[in-house]
Image 1: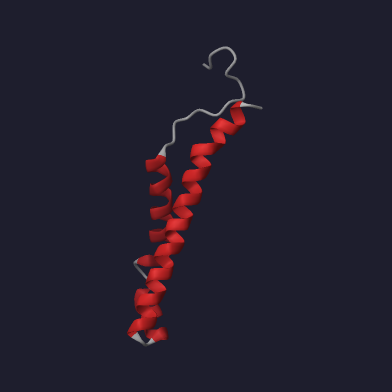
Image 2: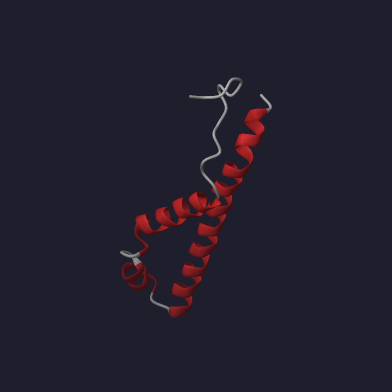
Length: 81
């Protein structure tokens, strides 16, 4: 049961760990364990392979940051409505 005056408000039960876990799980689920050999064979040159891994890591960090921002800011913004 919700307390009086709490109707329509989000509960803060998901935290930073959840946001990081969702992003890491999504990255692994997309194929980080299945596709490196295929990507490496298509790229050929070691410098290109490492560059793609670095870009992929930056992309994952941006995704994590987005999820964390949503989780951190959304409940505060919705409480003022």
